[in-house]
Length: 320
Image 1 (cartoon, rainbow, N blue to C red):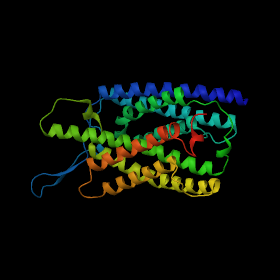
Image 2 (cartoon, helix red, strand yellow):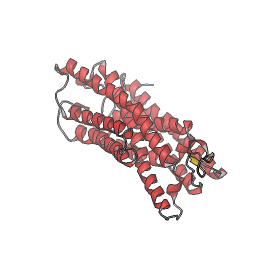
Image 3 (tube, one colour):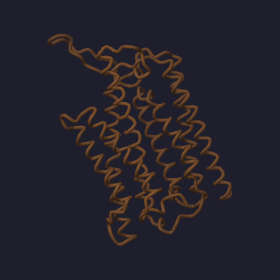
Image 4 (cartoon, rainbow, N blue to C red):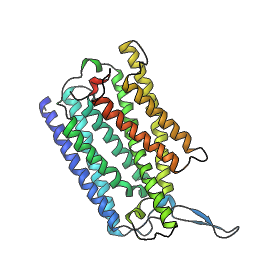
């Protein structure tokens, strides 16, 4: 295929991925509509010195209706197919341009969203109860993809001179991985805050059925947010360090408090604070979850405002 044909294929696969993700969102919504409340994994003592009583492992859904299960599996299949088409967007773009396919905002944002989808799919396979958060992951994915296509799209072309470095493969790749994982972690914390508030209301006597009862337990969501942040934090740390080394190679200094550098460091501090708070008495639970949500907000601000609005040495990473 010619370079023009590969570029056109990449654009087509982008639309296919959005369509498949949209269908997955519908299937996930239907799964929630036909599902039943999930039970929380717990070991409770019955009376003083009583024997422990085990709930289903991993917060699994108890007695899930067959129709809901089929819809959930269909949604996961559509998600995987969408991820394959999504990966094809970047592969075709890379082949068309003969370079790594994250040399501008369109490609970088597309890659970040792909990492988020893959991270969610891996979690859902390892812990099937997390399949129930699919609509809350895929809906933002669809919105992000639409906005990327509308406002960040850039024609396939060569790298700008400032990005022609071997550090592109190291720094931008790890930044993409870290951001995508933090995306899932942040959503898990948002859902944890929602689910824990719902549990508190139920404990206070508000027992009216709600779709929120079909979310995984608050404990499972908090654990997911923490584990994904633990996975993403060293990757983001390496990305910041690699960026500093690249800056020294390109501009003769490791750190210059450029807006992009500053906000990348702020994000690092926020996630370090979250991981510390998550293990600190008095900060566990909702307070630490809010710190994680702030971290996600900082990452999104760094991607959009700092790249597209502010001026600095990283301005070349904007829409071109």
